[in-house]
Length: 203
Image (cartoon, rainbow, N blue to C red; front, side):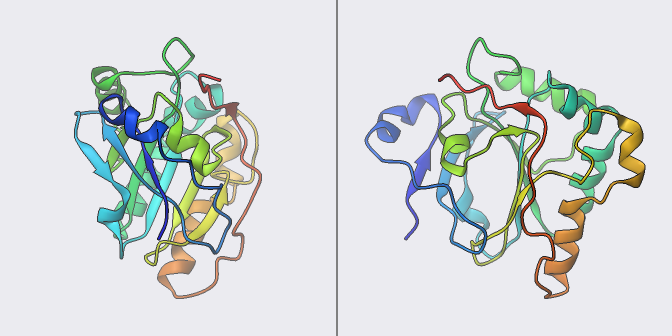
C-alpha cells in the first residue's frame, strides 16, 4: 500500500509522524496524499482511483507560469484533460512569505481571474506533497494513470522558455500523453526535464 502524504495545518501533526514516500518513478505506484483545497475541503487522491489524474505545480508569480496562463495554454490544457475524463489537481507548495504562496481566498481569486479549469486547487504550504513527489519547478506536471501508477513526469512542453510565442510550435507533452493513455498506448515521452521557477519550499 502506498504511504500517505498529509498536508494542511489541521493535520500537520499527523504528517510529522509519517515518513514521506520516496519520489515515485515512472511506471511505479504513486504515494497517496490528502490536502486542503482553496475552499478548505480536504481532497484525497485515493478518491480518484480508476481515473487519470494530472498534478500541476503552480506559482502565479513565476514568469514561466505566467507564460502558460496569460496565453491561455494552461487553461486549454486543463479543459481538454477534464473533457477527456481526467482529474486535474493544481498544487501550490509555496511556503508562507515566499513568492507565489497563496491562502484559500487568494487562490480562489487567481483561479477566477485566470479562468483556470482545474478540478481542484490544493494548498501545500508545508511542501509535504511537493517534496514527496519531487516537484522541482513551477510548472511541473505529473500524470497518474487509472491504476495509480505514474505515467508522466516533467514539463508541460518541449519549449523551455518564458516566451509565449514558443507555445504555437511546442509539443504539449501532457496532452500527448493523455491521448496515448486514452488510446491504450504506451506514453511515448514518459519523462522530460521540467522547466520554470524552483518551487519555493520553506527549506
